[in-house]
Length: 99
Image (cartoon, rainbow, N blue to C red):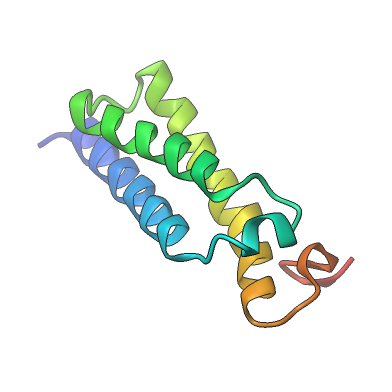
C-alpha cells in the first residue's frame, strides 16, 4: 500500500469517526446548538464515507468534499452539540471558551 492508499485509509477512518459520533449525539442537541439537524449530518457524512469505500483515492473530488464535511462536523458541530448535551448554553461556547 502506497502513500496515497494510506492517505485514503486515513480519510476513511476520519469520516467513519465523524459519522459514528454524529449518530451517537441526541437529536435535540443539533437544533439546540443552532446547527443543521441530525439527519442532515448523517446523510452527508454517510455519503462521504460510502463514497470513500467505493473510490478510496484521496484525490477524488467527492472524497475531498466528504473530507471537508467531516472536518466541519468535528471542528464546529461536535463541540457545540457536546456542550448542549453537557448542559451548556449551546452556541454560546466556542472550542476555546465563551465567544
